Length: 232
Image (cartoon, rainbow, N blue to C red):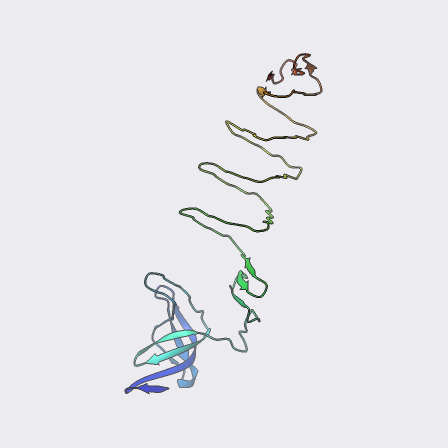
């Protein structure tokens, strides 16, 4: 407790008994002054005007308050014997939520850890630009759904798609511009006409159940199968 020009200011530790989430304030009980319960005290934030922070306290949380006249402010929460810190390193800054979600950064080992016990929703108004110096390791248990409005460009020397499930490409146009394309498959189904254009070199196709044209080396399909056309 101290005075500034006859203005009495008190710094006290109390326990939160009521919260007002809309106003970002709380009422605090002070056991050292006959269990006195304060009026709504605003909770100190970093920014409240243009940038708007939001950080609430919980019921029964121990907080430090500055009291003056008939009001005051909650400076923040402090740990005690019952509520101990989740992290124990001076190099770590982070937060652990009540549901187990954890977000932290360790400056000593340069590790950003994000453990989300739920869903992640992001709306990007412009674009995302990311530069990865090493690699991305992605494990998805169910599926990936992506809707691309314009185009998807991928520039990479090698693409490996591994697994024994189905891959479906359902497009009006699918173009491969490669110097070398290899398809190793025990069972390949093609529905519709297949046009093979050969500008240089030769075309060699060996398919079971097909007869082969002696001029271009092109198999002629039996009745009911796709027509294979080639141009020299």
